[in-house]
Amino acid sequence: MLKGKYAVMLSRNARGSGAVQTAKDMAARLGVAYLDRPHNQVLEEFMAAQALAAVIVLEKDGPRIHSEYGTFAYHPGMAEIRVQQLLRGAPAPIVHASDLRRGARPLERTLRLASDAAVAACVAGPTGRVVGLEASLLLHFAVQYGLAHYECKTPLLTAALRRVEAVHAVAGEYLAACAADSFDVVYFDPMFRHPVQGSKAMEALRPLALEEPLDRTTVELALKVAPRVVIKERSEYLLREYGCQEYVGGKYSRIKFGIIRR
Ligand SMILES: C[S@@+](CC[C@H](N)C(=O)[O-])C[C@H]1O[C@@H](n2cnc3c(N)ncnc32)[C@H](O)[C@@H]1O
Image (tube, rainbow, N blue to C red; front, side, top):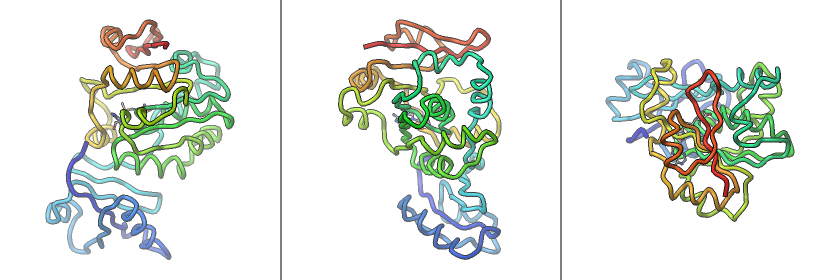
């Protein structure tokens, strides 16, 4: 997770009535400074001079996070494609593994872009409740903004994004405070130990995330909170180590979903 000082600033092309105040409010919510964008310095030089690890620049279409690893603005990742596939009736291993249905109450421990949570919210519908935890302050900030404002090509997905509740929390602490059976399923999508080469946007994203391996204690806590736990991994061996007894996986994909029932 990116360590160091962050700040919020307003992009030159986003200036307009109320924009400075919106940026200042964002800075206050994040508990970081609001800084005026210098006219005569490129952002990278300004960040170096101020010793900033990240700057959240409020653009016309929302916040964009800048760090030495690149820039990132919220998008729902693969959710659009996955929801289109769902609507065509294609098999969805995550839905099957998590036993998602209308009115379901899944907890996603690893929210990031909320792609998986958005698919869950589509299936669960308005009577369900999808909660997602994100430990990274910057990612939580970006995803919370995106869930409230991002317009997808598929209206069903836009509506689903609006229903996902994004919570800034470290999973262990959150799960420990939950009442028994607060959710139907707890879903874990931990960071892969060996990252796959991704796009530039994904490379800018990874350093913002918390890279903590999933531990057995968290899985045990999850089994108190829900009768079913689902873990996404590339290795069946790792899934077995976590205690998974059943596996669901795409025929043409290395991704597997391990299931543990209480
Ligand atoms: C592989 S990504 C999950 C991707 C997500 N399923 C999606 O659809 O976009 C893992 C995310 O979990 C977060 N994370 C890792 N450990 C966590 C923890 N203990 N508590 C909460 N969030 C955690 C990371 O910051 C990262 O954003």
